[in-house]
Image (cartoon, rainbow, N blue to C red; front, side):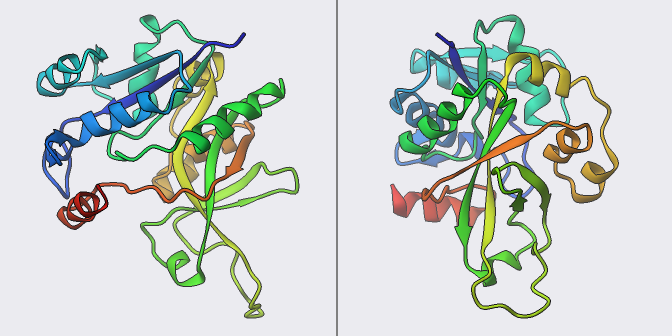
Length: 238
């Protein structure tokens, strides 16, 4: 049987909401909520938090959780969790975003299930959004081929609705990635690609290097905490 591990990259510094992962969210910090909801999903053999800061380490260890402390500076969450591979014994690695405290069991289970197909190398999640949300540059969109593999990701609204069709579907990319172990290690050894640099989306490095990303549909709308307003929204949801 394939052994699965969820790795939660947890960088302490943040731009729009300083030290956001240790902000209070109903009596626990944001990173503690993310860890606990990932653990509660019950779909992983192991759950790890991978961090660069002792405060986050201490908060997770208080919950009895496993922590890997990064020894290097990293440009992305994928690079951070790849360093932790020396400690994690798993065939399938799922990168769960540290600032998304409400993880969904069904979405995570469906994501892992596609790896029953031996040809799937990488998988991620998508959810349908209205046209007006597709115009938001902070919302990453994805278009796929007929087999459900990603063709492109963009901050622009894709596809461009030239004929103003009323039935056009837009899909938001939810940044949870599942990798076969060897693919993750290979991915993070590749140089930053041109499209990745333009859009500031690391998954484009995979596409530019010929990897396929299987997109799995979900109805779950994640809550990513990037601003003080996002944090207040999460408190109301909780």
